[in-house]
Image (cartoon, rainbow, N blue to C red):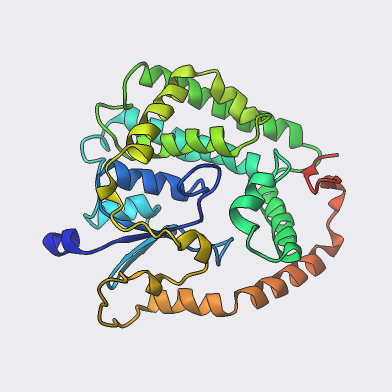
Length: 323
């Protein structure tokens, strides 16, 4: 089984590149980095059909498909399936566990807050909605702002306190990670999923968030984290061996709605395989995506008719902020 997995060709399907990153999605980027750390050969493809899907990123190979919304995320699923595991030597270390928890919760939540609530939404729209009709993209953005506020329990009355709590936790995490890192190349001897999550976070924060971002300013106070990201980016994302991505689709970004079934090699035609039930469900959604999203937006707006939208202010630049 292990030998067949090694010989199989794997495709990572993520959201499109932006901000000078191989994928502009803050959830997809750590998975991409994780595979690069492992020198795992894979092809990169893009799917922008489902801006609100929790299944992206996902990996497929033959009949094998692993989605991000399974078993604690795609990195964990790959570890459990014995495909890529960088954590075997660290997953029992209390300090490693606590560090990973900070990155995957406090820092991930801070990025979510900045994308949807703490900024004008320019970065979020570029990542998720730039390929959709303007009206649908704008409506889905407003819907997601509301969803994120609900998730954090943010109201007009407690907005400032919630924001302070989110940034306080992020600053604590930066301090702890900076201290642990020191002048090392990796947080713990060699790369692990913790480094993949942290590197993805730092690169996204520096390159995708605006210069006025509170989170970006807080991160800039820790020079060793910035140098850490610059060094690893140069080594693994820019100057690394091309063998880890042997057949990068140069046309993928211009055909961002390509279906996973079209990602097979053009030089060697493979026999048609029977689709799994997960793939059938996933692709069936694509056929009706625009229609269902439009209906969802109309239902959302009608249901929210009684919601006090005075909590959200729309400025001339289409940004959102609290009164």
